[in-house]
Length: 402
Image: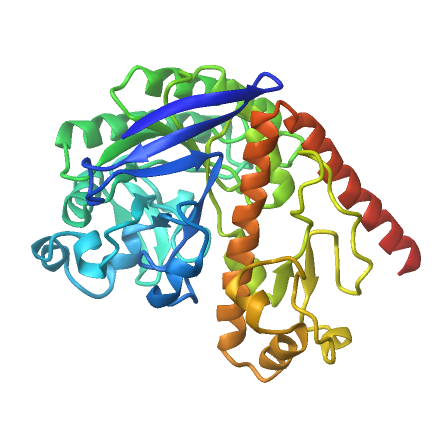
């Protein structure tokens, strides 16, 4: 794996290029521009998009897939996956980069109250499981992802200071164990935790930087902290990380949260935002047309809109013959209308989620493309302020007319 920063904007926001190939299961070079999104998956495939529709998504932006090894606790054994040549070979995902992260925000949630000195505990489809470093690295050796994240003891914000301190100690110890076991997978991303404590975040980052890792995974977000607390926490971590290695964060998903992460210097985002809005019947609609590099088209006044998305279950769309976004080039917008998707949602057809996930993935990747363009032109902070201002203004107007 290789990573290089190509542009900076407003001090911390940065655009770069991540190149994969040769270290894990991805056979050829795969270049991903950052900041970028890791597509959320279930067993390495998007939750609703079938493999034959994957090529319809923007490439190469959609070629980085996040998965949790814990998803594979049910089904084929690790030995069988290994015998088949790993996940790339088993699933035929030869042109995709796979990133293994123990936690996801749907089915493999950290259970900090059951975690102990031996391993991390997770709520999984198979029940609560305690995963030890040796077991975890054996999974990685069988699956052979391109990038894998070490085990972490993630804790919510309300735990005691003593518990938060022990979570950092365990995470660092497990990192050393994972490195010593040397699985057959690709590049290692060291885990950084510390809850809502700035000093513990800084201590964990300083220790992880001393280890021989290819990048950094910043966890423990989305577990009770507020958006106002995050800038200081992200700064405490990123200020101690070398510029030449990529940074991956988990738990920041909303567009505003992504902008917050980019402003702090984050390169990769592991989020279930697309899944959550898709399952709720929402479609992303915030403007992606470029006027300058940071201007956004005035917000829509459609019923059910909050300046970023619309609720296609709303009755106002029953006879709407327009696509979700007029200028969108995704498969859904080129072939189907809001009225049709509204009908599919109301009769509980799974095709509704398929079409919505295609559009939402396409649209969210377009959002990351705009962020990269704004950084390259040195206008990221202006882009961020304009986006947040327009959204708040729309919400204020909506509350007045409610």
